Length: 75
Image (cartoon, rainbow, N blue to C red):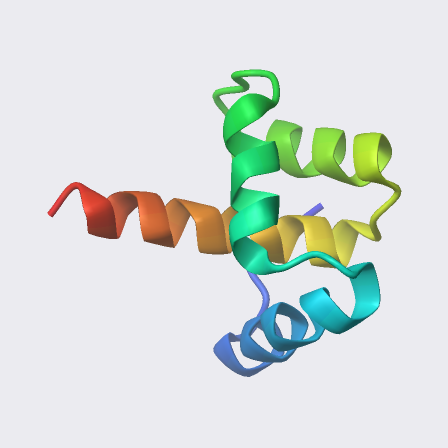
């Protein structure tokens, strides 16, 4: 499974997540942060998809967005 959607697809997935899941992005970031500490993004997205009944596309987009936000906090 690839975590690399095109920038356009990624933006569309992220924009739809609150509507599709009923949870805002910060809530999902908290779920990721409180979840198991996997080292690989693929492991985190698989866990997120299975644990929260998300499609792998949405899970991968959330993990990728979380990584972007996490990196931005450290700069």
